[in-house]
Amino acid sequence: MSVAEQIQALMPDLINGKRHQQLEEELAESDQRTGRHVVNGIKFPFHVTRSNLEAMKTFEVRDDDVFVFSYPRSGTHWMLEIVGFILHDGKDDFDRTFMTNGLEFSLAEDPTKVESVTPGYKTYAAMASQRCILSHCLESYRPPQILTKQPKVVYVARNPKDTLVSLSKWAPFWDFAEFFWAFSLGKTVFGSWFDHVLSYWRQRNNENVLFLKYEDLHKDLRGSICKVAKHLGKDLPHDVIDGIVERVTFGGMLKTYQHLEEERGEEGKRMTSHKGNTFLRKGKVGDWKNHFTVAQSALFDKIYALRMEGTGLDFDFEI
Image (cartoon, rainbow, N blue to C red; front, side):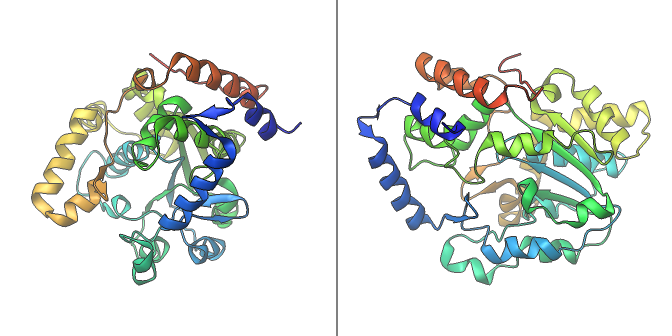
């Protein structure tokens, strides 16, 4: 029995009174309605077109690029703020293009307009160096030149229970129990959390790769910032590090986002949210306890143990 079949077998026969076949049919209808599509077995939102994924193969990487990769809702924008301040010696006058452009995205309002939007990879191609590039690309879809030119890569991973809850807020068309089922089986966009995280975890010893956990940022923000700075080759004074710490706390980022919205209007709102969903929600570890039932938590613990066994990777689910 495959791992996927084992996870399927762990699921209750009925979820909200629906059998798995009914859930599959409803999910397929929802995917068609919202433009979600499957490429090589992985589901993508309509913003990530087939042509964008194909363009990753020839995207021109620069030696001084900094890529920030993550599974969605895992602290991506938090890490981008940290990297931005580090690269600019604690100053906030850096290019915030990453806030409105993911490398593989064409951020249109709906599927009918996606071809009229400039893809993220074209926006990044026109940027001056040094580029800070946001991407949710799975390891297998990354630009191949990342392996040959060795730019800096930072991967941030968040425990899957909190990731699941945060991602569910971006899918209001699903009941939480149904979203739990889809996430656990890797049927949400960007595929399985386990596959995504573990593919980068296996590269953690590569010299150009830094693998960080969202929870460790919470436990030791200053130490984590110093680790990122060292990875990026930046030796910053203590007072600059202290300033960055203050600016990238959750409260500090809220102030930054509020300032961007007030100063830039609609453009600012596009930098801090997408289709009404803010990039900053609660910024906490352990919020999953307010959403999971006892049975769901126990079930997910079994799935987690099954998928993570022997990997050497483990997460804090509360701190």
